[in-house]
Length: 540
Image (cartoon, rainbow, N blue to C red; front, side, top):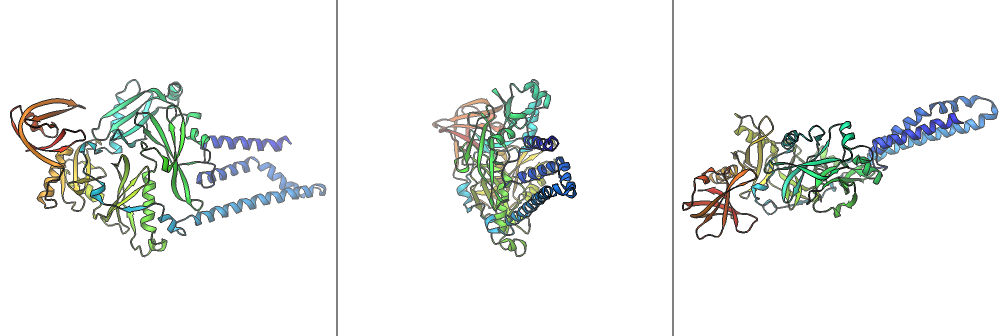
């Protein structure tokens, strides 16, 4: 009897260990769950093989035990029949959940609204433009970490570089992680002491030290491993990644989107909510997607949003049409970027025909918190053509262009790109007109690039009027003051009989250092968010 029960007990123990390690959701809509069940069955079969073999061997014994053994034999056949039935059902569910038979449902996963570019995307203050991509941000973070001699031997920079809006500025944040298991063992009581915040506009990197360390993260172990922590709290939830963010007070959180299959059993992946975990205390709360707090920027992953838009663009006229006729079939271009808009982070990518030509028929913005999707029908060069045009202007320097941002410059849809050297550091900037991508401006600063670009727009007859928010003023300097802000020298100017204060950074126009009290000056300026203070954009 013990010999029969021991393999069963061992099977249950191994199943528990497997679940503790792999942590699949207990949900029949999850591929992970079915994979786990399949592996668990194989394990059970191997561990109980001898008992199964004995059932078959004893069928031909004495007649007084034949009836009992035949009953057991039939039981085994029933088990294998049920397994075969499950396999057939699994394959059938996959077919019934596929775009081949449910194309209309797939094309309806995302609601796309046509929108007006100039109304939605206003000209922004260039101090708000994120000039770094993830690769450049990671280089700066690694350099910052290398300078922290008290931490560099114990911790490393994590790969969770989330782009968020923090106090109305685009930043990337990433936590530290334990360098290895030994470092975890010696530091687990205090936790991870800091995270890194990178200003995407100024390239400033700050190591933010915490009063109490991060105790819950993917680099922790046992009950403080983030995935294990939320799995035991939400055993049926299908989590779709983990995003590191900070709230308005700088407190670190993990945002864990919860997905659902909305088409059949396995199709139509969508996000139905999110579990928000305090990275320090482990406290968590679940929000339905409509109730996710405003400060959270990323619930929908960019790849999922792009996948859903591709379903919409290719399947709205049926699956057969997407393969053969391809009437009105569209797809997103390869690559995407992020735009800060309405205190949210939006995924931006171009839209082109499925024929794969080198032009876009429009652009799409997708909100990473709400999934709101806006389409802009603007034809022009696709992003990689713009990148090639920008790189052609600096081919003697060998700089490489980042994937562009879409900006509104003087009312024109414009690609904005950073140009990086071989070390991955940003050296110059480029602006490329979307509709006429031969119009390319290069500058060592964003402001210089903008001035050159607007000059090209006027000289080529693309725009004729100065934008309404740019004004010109002249007068005698009443006072001029110098200040250092974030390591950059800035001059503040006041004119006689003028109540406004005008500011300009030396790096944007070095001519300002030649000006003194009593000098006549004429310049263009734009309004800032602070009343009575204006930004000088060009000195005449």
